[in-house]
Image 1 (cartoon, rainbow, N blue to C red):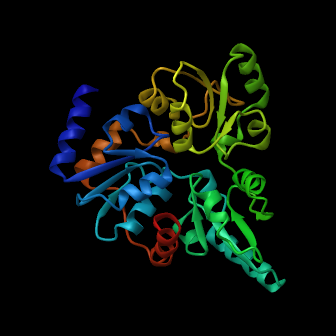
Image 2 (cartoon, one colour):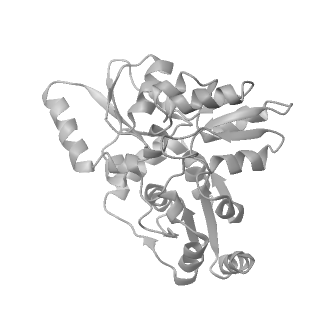
Image 3 (cartoon, one colour):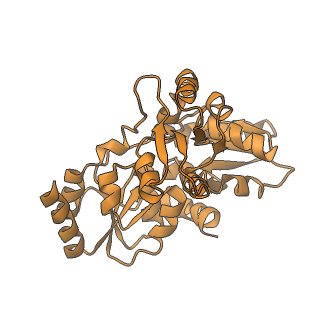
Length: 308
């Protein structure tokens, strides 16, 4: 393992590469990264990369976004099969047909799309949001227009609650956040009665309503930083987030909220990226995200939504 880590660090220098890693990657990968963050932070970090190559340790739509924002750079993804259940739930052709149907029925709307989507879907959108900026962007949509929110219905429901805007919600969900068990959460609360529950807005309503704080991963980090004394936090998001929380604020204790099928929830797509695959993609320069026709339109929407 030590030799593998050393090899990756050496290859990163030799290949003039920068490693970006999402908070849902294994801690050993996050530890090697030049930038770690949520989707919003990493999208912005990608625009500041000075090396010729970006290695994106995350899932496919994230690497696509990095390529859109860096057309001249080589963008690598350790495993091209690292997808996203949310992105898969909203195929571009299906969204296009649905938008046409709404227009034919006289509906006036803007499409607000969660960043967990393909570039082709982003190209059909008026706005792109992350959990970190979604509330702000929703408030930019003119009041006389409806909002079609895709693809995450749970995040959409949460945004309806906090903004007061009714939305047309696409029927998609994150496979990791949807399987949190409210029964197991209540049981964990009994075992850790002083625990503070923090949940990602991708969680279903029955998890959110039993939470003390709801926010994206960056908001979670900021929230726990505000407690000077040691606290117990019950964390309802992808389990690798606990590594990041413990790394930044080790004075606290973190407990993963159980899922229906296991003691913790890990994204199987993120797990496809391993140290061995990270080493191999640096060594071989593949798999590479290449420029696609839909990237041009998608890039305009991403820049307007996330960078301005």
